[in-house]
Length: 192
Length: 282
Image 1 (cartoon, each protein chain N blue to C red):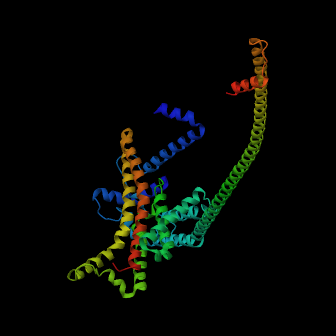
Image 2 (cartoon, one colour):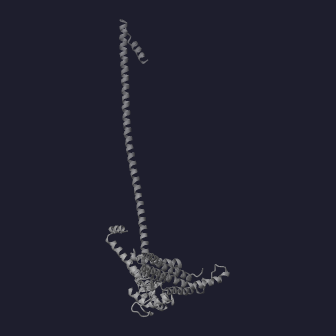
Image 3 (tube, rainbow over the protein chains, first blue to last red):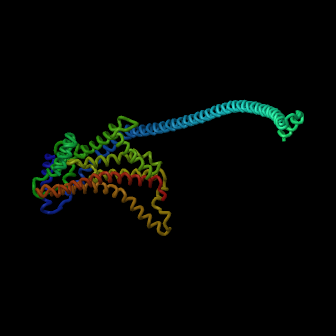
């Protein structure tokens, strides 16, 4: 760079001096862009450069990049489709799980209901049996009570008759006691 | 500032320290390269950086002489090859950094061609991409201190613009025949105005390559010249030169922006002209 600067300094020393004296006397050293002597050189190398870049791009870079982008697009599409498929499968699995769960629940409810019904029926049978037993015992007891009652009444009548006859005898000694009349009177009093 | 830097050094370790030292050296080299033309005093030659000179020896610049322009054009080709060929050699579905940069450039220009000029302009995409990559690489390479900016020369940009102009004009006539002339006949305007408008349109059509080429060369040249002038001030002012150095840094950032934008502008204008050639009816 320093060398280049020196060479340019050397090359333009005279021009600079001229410029310093008569400002912009000749335009050439003012703007290197307008130094037409370098134009063919620049144009030649520019055309070569553009051709090189165009060749590199159109033969190597652009087909490669477009292929990569297409491949990526394909991969994305495939992955998205696969994801969609998996999602559908998951939904299906969930649905079948829910169905199985509902079935199991219904089954369980059915079994519980059956068991409950069975127990209820058994219970009813036992209750009926117990009721029948109770009823039988009660009627038996009632019969015995009636019997005892009847027995007690008869005994009481008899006792009353005997007592009445004795009382009559005691009240009216020597008098003949009509057993028949006493018994009829007692019976009438007891019943009445 | 000092405590801040020591803190960050303590935190991030030797790797970052080396990085900062390299950045510092690069900045110093940049300033030194910008200033090495000056042996003191205010003898600023901001245009000397554009001189086309033979790379070897001291002879005249002939057509096939290998000059600094040749070198930096070759480096632009090398940069394109590095980015678009070496960078994409992995052909990976999940791209590496360099490959995604190449794909970014590809997609950027391809979308531009498709959006501006339409789908039927896509066959011309490689030509437009060639122009874009050459201008972009040449502009960025020109920002290396001490380099030569090939796109700062009107000879280069004029050839680029003339190639676009000729291609587009010939293409317009080949694709549309005489119908291409309807580009100059504004059918939406009142009939009385149309001849006048036709003249204006015709003039503007032929001014296109001029503005197309001068816009690029002018922007690049002006930025580089301003950088050089500021660097010259920095050399002349001694310690107070810190102010122009800050200016140089700021303008350098602007120039990075301009480099990309001018490549973009040149390309999108090419697309617009191509659209006119393919669809001349307003």
